[in-house]
Length: 101
Image (tube, rainbow, N blue to C red; front, side, top):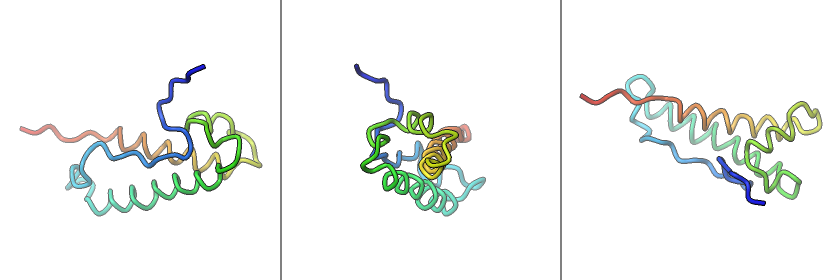
């Protein structure tokens, strides 16, 4: 059975930003975007991949990992990293660029 995957299966991949890092300046600087994306977001993706390697979560989509680990104390680290990776990807897609005139 084929699944509709909106986010890649583990190993998870840091999704590309939908715009240049400087595109939101001056509201959010390129330095701030670069740090938050390249350190925080990447860190959650990398940690999730380490935690999920060799487990039943390895081949699941990000959404499936979150659903399978929610509320399970022994899976809290996997849940936290998966949900933060999802939150960050959602955040980047949610920011709108100013209309060019």
